[in-house]
Image (cartoon, rainbow over all chains, first blue to last red; front, side, top):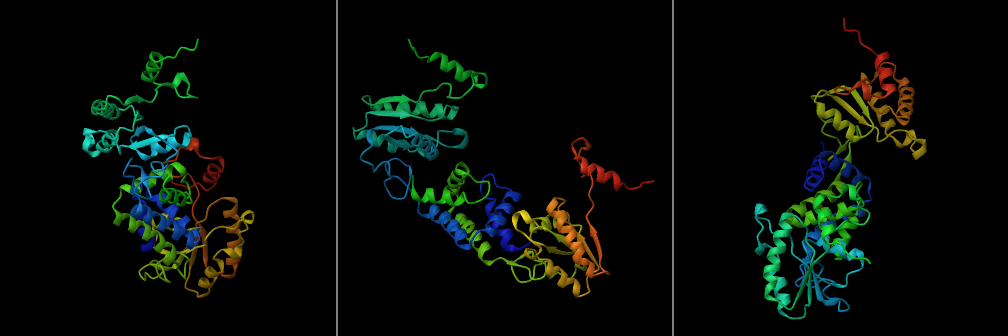
Length: 198
Length: 198
C-alpha cells in the first residue's frame, strides 16, 4: 500500500467516528477533489487549530480576544446564559430568539473524569457578576448527574450575588415529542410544572 | 460564529457523509488534539493529494512511478487480477492469498455516467499482454449491469491474446451468509455452479 495513502488514512482515523474503511473512502474522495480545494481544506484545519482563541469574556470560540457576541453592543449585556459547550451556545443562537450574553463553562463537574470546578470557567463568570451590570443568569446545562452537580455548585457560588436573578431553562415535553415515548422523569416534571391556561 | 470555525466546518462538509453537525463535532475534536497532531493530519491530506501517483504499470495508487506490488520481483508476474478500483485491490491483498499482479481499471463502463472504454485503463492492460509474459487474467469486477458490460468488452478485447487464460472470480453464497437472505440471482448461480463433493 502506498505510504502516502496509508499515512492519510491513519491520520484521518484520529478523528471520532472515522474507522479504517471510512478513512479510505474519504481519502479516495480527496483524490477526486481539485488540488486547490484540498489545499484549502487542509489549511482550514491547521489554521483553525492554531489561530482560534477563546473569548476572554465568555469563553466562546473566537477569532479575537472578544467574541462577536460579547462585542455586540446592541445585545442585552445584563443577561447571561450559562452553557456547557460552544455547540450549546450555537443551538440557542440558531433559534434567533435570545439577545443576551453567554458564558461557556467548558464542561460540567465530573469527578469520574477528574473534572472539578476549577477546570471550568466559573471564576470568570463570578468576575463578570462582580461588575454589577448583570441582572439575570440563565443556567442552560444538561440534566445529567454531572449537570445537576454543576447546577448546585453554581447556585452555591452565585449566592454571593443576591441581587442577580437566577433561572434554569424549562424542562418538559419537547414540541413534536410523542408522550408515549417520553421518559418518566420528564413526564413527572412536566406534570409538576404544568401551566394554567384558563 | 467564529470565521475560523465556520470555515473549517464548511471545508469538512465537502467530504462525503459529513454534514453540518458531524463537521462541528470533528472541529471540536480537532480543537482538543495537540497542535502537532493536527498539523500532521493537515499535511498528510495535502501531501496525499499533491504527491500521490498512479503506477505506470497497473494504475494502482503509488508513491513512485511503479507501485510496491509491480516492483516486487518475488510475486508472480504471469497472473494479472483486473479490478475496478484501488479499494478492491486492497481487499484482495488483505486476504494474503494472492501473489500475482493487479490491474486497476479505474471504474467500469457506464454510458449513464458518460464513462466509456477509453476512460478506463484498458489500453494499458492490452499493452502489458503484448509483452507475452502474462499467462492468466483474472477478472474481479462487480456483477452490476456496468460491471457485466465491462466484462464483455474486456473479453472481446482480450480475444486478441488467445494464449492468455481468462477467468472471473467465483460467484456464490458467501461464507457466513444465510441462504434465507441471499438474493435469487446469487442462489440460481450458486446452484448452477454447484461442486461435486463425492
